[in-house]
Image (cartoon, rainbow, N blue to C red; front, side, top):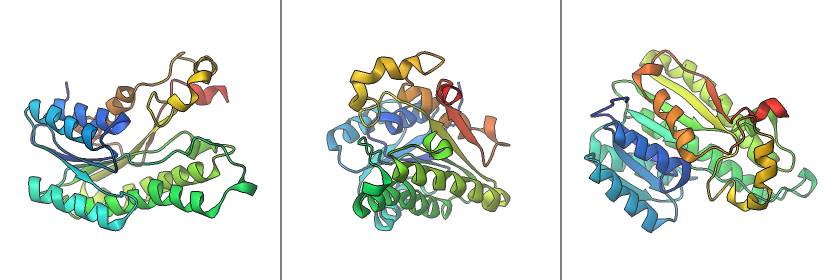
Length: 250
């Protein structure tokens, strides 16, 4: 088991799904964890209780993580609780489940998707690195769509593709500060936001995944924990695809 006792981590979009799984694995490794969320009060508070029961410090912050103000406040709360930041997991995001051709893609959806998936990551990372005096780890959740595109989801694919370029740029910029910057790129994941709207098509989806299954949130959290650990101390600027081999099948 990876032991990161004493480290301090922030997880955005942390109340459920991939974010909650990341928070749990980090806590199991001994990390004090702050989670940020937008609307799931009961789930967020239940998770904080669960993490503290593991013997670590934990807190939750509620806000609109597409904004600078919320990200700054989240990191400020972390500094108040922990003193500094060692690990930042940028997971908050939106995936509009209705495909829309670019000719019909309205301004509101375009700007909302990019603000949530890209602006929020910039604001969060900028605030976090200001409080990483001893180096650190930035890990972002991107997507296979950001690498190969996604018909009907140009807004989502563009936001995740830009995130990947952001990761690579920060890796070069922050390396001299002993801060590594990487991304985990999932395919289909069994979360409320991603796979459940497509429950009727699950059989077809899994038939196109060589491993024959949709990922669980923990399948994504494990690679995040690895990238946040000393085992990945010489890994930076990388996009770790975790998709069961689905991109190999077109």
